[in-house]
Image (cartoon, rainbow, N blue to C red; front, top):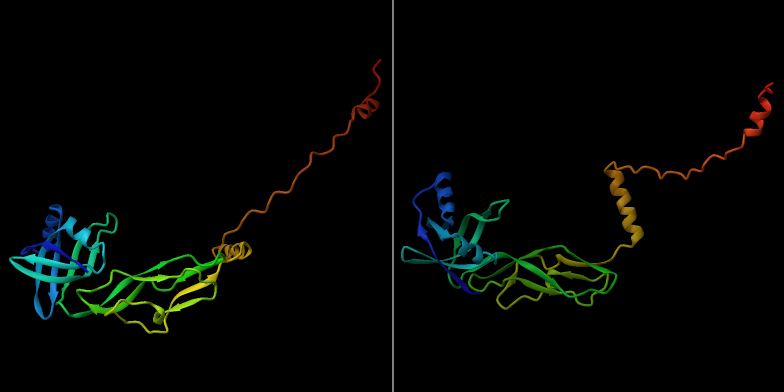
Length: 225
């Protein structure tokens, strides 16, 4: 894993007002902590941090006041609408130190036609050196048929990476794709539970048969003189 070098500035102002001023300057308030040291409050260029954190376990080399710190993202707060980073907690690490993190599980390949892949876990808990964390764990389901199951013990892990998940944990399940009839039945059940009712289809109507009452009317009418 490559290090992303970022220059930060020491932060001495705190509170919501100070945080808003920092964000207006396109920077992010952040805290470096860990190893029993006092927290280091910094501001980090927002664009650089956003690019670095595209990888959830990015290794950051933070330089502040002439000191360099290796850190991993611990908690990142984002604006729920715009998505920009509002605050970041970064945990200090050392070279050679092992850490436990969650890494994405990337499933690739095509299963046999008529089958579906059900991913039980989107991330996998692993332990590895802080400076050698994999970006993801890859898993191929190429050619698998309905009924196939992949457990945690079946995952191919890079050297130096240990699984932090029970080996018998089901990770991916390949099942038969539902038929159209099954889908319709499931939809009907869901609609019934939700109280959705459909109007009955209108029956076909026929035009009433018209009779020619002219002659009868003529017979009933009295003769005029």
